[in-house]
Length: 492
Image 1 (cartoon, helix red, strand yellow):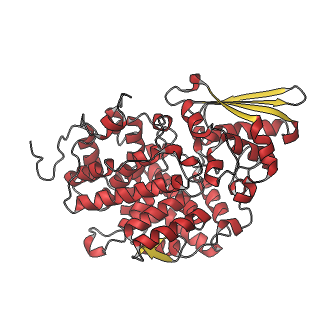
Image 2 (cartoon, one colour; image 1 turned 90 degrees about the vertical axis):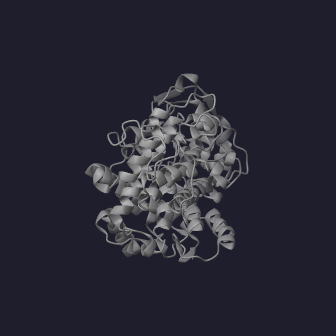
């Protein structure tokens, strides 16, 4: 049966319910606490973009992509340059993901800001005459929340971290839909066009997780998903149709294909929609490492607070992990190791953190990665898969056993990363932003950007925010250390 004009194909289906919610959502739909948290998450994401914009691999991406995309009129964060709308979404997402400092969702692993903010910043550059109503800050914030809510839900329908276990980069599988949903709301699409945008976004899901083995491509996956979601919503706005009921189709549907043989759960797509806010579950990182390794770092720093750890006194370290984290980060590190690989690898992360007492940017520069002290310790660190940790929602469980040369042992277990169990407060997110961007941008610009983001719901235009983001930044590897970790792991 043909779809009625302006209506979803099956209003009561998960796809129909989600599309209707996206089309009808306004900022007032979200409780004040969710709006406040979303603004702070945006601040964290943009801070990560400023830090990531001029990293060596980001510069490589800019040179290659702009040669293809041309000059355009969409801002490149931190470059004082522009490119096409799709190219900017791709590159700005790559910047946010550039140094593993950005947010992640622990239940449905994805990096929301690197998907949603770049897609929306590009969408906002559409000619104002074609964008009604005007692209003000409240509209932008509402669309960001849509993305924060949609990405985790569709991810949970595929059992979240199970996608990592199977070799997919889960964020770019889930992320095209999150970005498409956010832009669809921002552009004011009706519910039928939103359904098309979801279908067009879903058919562009992708991402092989083996990128940690010497490739830069992981940095770009979420940017590609942001670009694809932008295209999906803009195509739908122009009348280009997508897969109807994309979450329910038994053949060629998103869940039936990506979840084949793994019993996907369509009910998760709309579970407690509007009552349970996934925005509140997004984790802001304390360490510049893959999220699944944060529990091990927490344990290491807790042990170091009770007994100073010296590399020469370590006989070996054993780390027990869930299968998804083990596959993602438990592989044997080999020299030379790229910064991406270092941030993914449990042995390197623990070795550098044990020696330096930190797990931030300075531990993952090319110079630090190549020093002999860390490579002397890496062979003593072994990851193990513990099947008992594979329970749904429990894949952050980690056990760390340190065996010393004097015959003594220390062992500790933690269910999940501290940043998951006790998320950083809004005030702590502001502190992280200030530390990360100190020296990368000048203090006045830093202050003005912070104020613009934390009052974005009151801003009549996005142009001032865009101008603050567009100016060139100082490459971070030339900046003095911006922050350090205390033994408890808090940013200081």
